[in-house]
Image 1: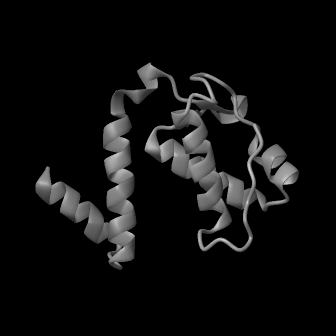
Image 2: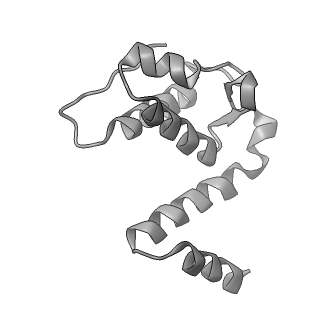
Length: 116
């Protein structure tokens, strides 16, 4: 699978990569259980910083699209991995909203605990 980054796009590179990988998974171009390139290898191939690819992978993992197994690598999530995917996606959305609103982590955690 080959992904590209548009330097003129308004979305940052990590977001462009995240969107492309998520779209490939949704379209079935990447199969459940399929291993993704390592962060370093993909960064080198695409001419990106390692942290850019790592952030895209972290975002995908928080959304339940991929799972990371330490030194084994990152893989497309399988159906059994999706048990908590909805909650993970909602949590990721909440964190982004809280950050956009300028909440501190402790304030966001307090909101969750109050509604639990």
